[in-house]
Structures are given as structure tokens and as C-alpha cells.
Length: 245
Figure (cartoon, rainbow, N blue to C red):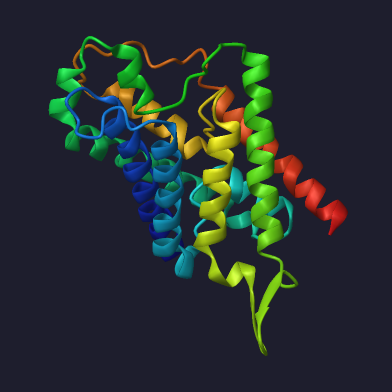
């Protein structure tokens, strides 16, 4: 049970800071408005790092249903815990998004004439809507994320300084932070690199429920893409990992 609690808290922090940087750089009258894509990519990477630092020692800090699925397929995580982890992650993502709304509520009011901007602080929407291509982009980005996580965590992946050595996986959050930032900067321009149903579907549900002035529909016609794409990419990454390692 305690592992589920930490998955909830870690994912809450991830979405609070990740959606928070989207709100900070997008909403009217925010001091960070116009910060741009590099700030968003850095913010999301650091959000993941902090979530991992919090949850890692207890739950392993998946913070992402796609990561949980990939680790289970790769044989690195018990299938019996998959559903509990995913429920905890989805709940954490929802609460994190609600906290962002409560934090920036005045700025949401000031942006009530820009419903697309408001939606973009909660969840992803494609730059050019082509659902087949958007799905492929999410598959590729998440495949890379999960494959890198599995490869980084291998016991044979070590670095040495003099006579001392340590596993790359042992330093945990920092390599994954770099992966997230790299993917965001290189592959995030098409769909916003969701790669995580708890980061996208849960905040999308929060957007649908919260009393936000001037909001549009929550993009339900697209909502399957940032769920099915990441889960497919994670499964492919795990299968490739088993094949090559």
C-alpha cells in the first residue's frame, strides 16, 4: 500500500510542476509568460526529477502507466502491482492538475478569452491534427523514453572514477531528467510529448470538471492518442529490450 501512496504523491508533484510550467509560460499576466519551449522542456524534466526523488526509494517512481507497463513486460516489475500503480498515478495526476488551477486561478480568469491556451496548460493537443501521425509520434517518443529507462537501469551500465564505480541507474533521477528534456526539445514539437496517460488524461478530466471561465471542450476526440500511443510505445520498448539485452 505504501508504494501506491508514493506513486500518488510523486505523480502529483510531477503534474503540479509540469502543468505548472505550462501555466506559468502561457497564461496572461504571469511573470513567466512567453518563457518558451526550452523553459517548458526544462520545467518538465525537473518536475520528473523531483517526483522520482520523492517516490524512488519507496515505489521505484514509475509515475507513468506506460513506464509501469513497460517494466512489467520486461520482467522488472510484478504484474500483480500494475493496476494499483496505474490507479495511484492517475489519481495523482488529477490532483496535481487541480492544484495548478487553484494556484493560477486569477491568471486563468485573465486568459478566459483563450480557451485553447487554457486547455494546453492541462493536457496535450497536436500542433497539426493528424491522429495517425500524432499516434505514431507518441509511440516513438515513449518507446525512446522507456527503452532509455530500461537501458540506464541495467546493472552493467556503470561509470568509473579512479577505483570507484557506480551504476548509472544508481544516480536515478538525473539521467531520466536528461532523457525527458532531450525528448521534449527534439521530439515534442508535434504533439507536446505526453508520453504519460497520468500526465494527460487525468489533467484532461480535471479540465472537464473544474469551473474554469471561458474553457472549451476538453479535446475528447483526441484524448485516446496520448493514452494509446504511450502504452504502445512502452510495450514495444520492453519487447526490444528483451530482444537485445
